[in-house]
Amino acid sequence: MTQSEQGTTGRRYARLGGFLILSLVAFFATLTLAQIPARLQAGETAASLLVSLQTTHAAMWVAQAATAGGPDSADFRRAAGRLERALQANEAQSEQTPHLRPFVRTLRDWLHQAGSAPATPASSLTTLFLQALRQLDASRGLLRAQTATADLATLQLRSALIALLVVLSLLGFRVLQWRRTPLLATPQGDERQLASALEITLGASDEALLIADPDDRIQHMNTAAEALTGWTADSAQGRHRGEILPPAEGATEDAGQVLDRQGRPLRLTQEDIPLGERGQGRLLRLRRTTPEDNEPALSLDPQTLSGRLIDALPGIFFLLDDQLRLRRWNRHLARLSDHPSQTLAGMPLVALCSEETRPSCLRQLQQALHTGSATGEIRLLARGGGMASFEFSLSRLQTAQGPCLMGIGHDIGERQRAEARIERLAYFDPLTNLPNRRMLINRLEHEIRAARRHAHYGALLFL
Image (cartoon, rainbow, N blue to C red):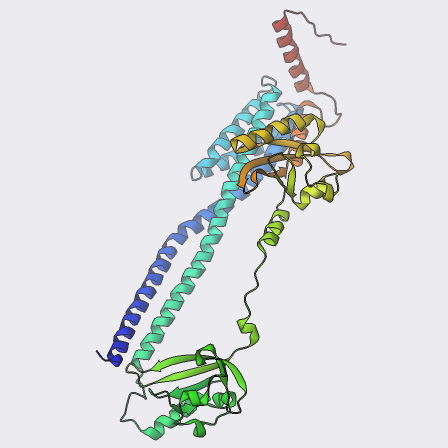
């Protein structure tokens, strides 16, 4: 098999491989398009459910505040009716979203027991209400994840459409190439007409283009190539490419460092494009490269990147050694602490905790160091003598220097204040700030249980 036949066979295999790749791209793009409508529908359903749950959330707080007036008050009846309508809408939607059912059941139990007060203890009502809030937050988190999946499906849809357009464009380009009759492959063509067509085609391009025969001798050159190399088309015709673009001293032609006609150094990238399937010649495309093209891509130092990521965390972050001393922390912990940043290094973490939580904090740290992980709550001393409550998780890491603990915590102060406000609304009148009937009943039940347990007697006096 001759070299020309080997080149033709290789091009055929390359063409077949290109068709296979395009077919695979089209197949996966079509498969992605088939799966996207269901994701988009799920995203629209999740978005409407989030709006409905927002209405239910507002109705829950209104009903909770109205329980202070008792189950027979007009405010409670109005709030209970509004919450009942919201629950009915949620029940209808829970058929498609099973994770809503526990929340609907818990909230309905709370509404039923709140309407039958004072038969139901206030502590049970508060527990049920908080449980419903947690289930509501969990359902809203799942729904937000579904909306994010729908957004991702939209992005996949756009990507699949772009891939299909690219495949169709490439196929159309190949069809046009097959239908076009190559002038260089037609020895019977008019040489003058061929030269004129080549001159017009090459002259219309802003790139430096040269046409060489199979022996690498220049046949045609456009105006951009004349300006780049310093040679004219007439003087370069019939000369070898190595004579037109000789390598610079100490460099090879493949390195891209060549000399123009005046001997001035040039840094070029050269692309060879075969003309015809039987090797009738080649098209040379030249492009001047700048020093910026050869500069390595800038990379971010891994240590700097990790430091920025740690400081970008919304909560506190700390890294402890096996002696439970601080080795690394983020800016949120440094701003919260009453100690200067330069004194935090090597300080035990328990030194930043309040006095009453130091023993429990030490136990949890030691547990995480031995078992590998732990979770809990911690109260840290803040600047100005205040306190900040955090819910944190600990994980043990093994390093070259030995085991260490990584902790991440988020502020739960707002949640604790909300729980205290709920308890305040449950046991005190919002207008007078005096204990209400539920508080009285709760205290009476407590005293009656204590009297029965210790065989004591008691009496209730009305003054």
